[in-house]
Figure 1 (cartoon, rainbow, N blue to C red):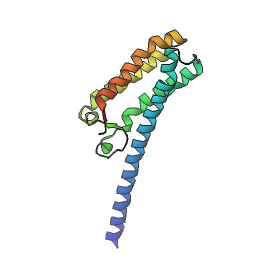
Figure 2: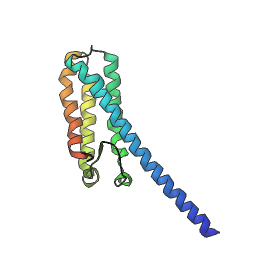
Figure 3: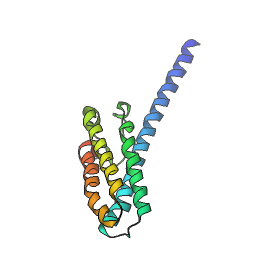
Length: 149
């Protein structure tokens, strides 16, 4: 009887761990998609002049990026390293091999967003701020993300 209880407990614990890992992966995908929408759907088109400048939309996009930047490091614990992912891009093993570098890259992204947040007041200041945000975002992607084949 004790053995059966231990087996059931072990199975439930394992299932809970798998669900938790999958939840982190889904959160990371949702966060990156929201970042893509904030950058590619809001900020970049306004900076290019393809969309009219809208301070409320800029503020919402920057808030999304800022929240995501703070959350990103916690979405990649070692427990998700070997979990098979089916999205177009997956985390690079470098996230765990160079944890300090990954955390520095996400901190750089957070800093770029935070600095821009205080400076963007119109289309010209948005246009001036976009290169630093884009560079920080893509710099992390170039090193810590891989395209699935």
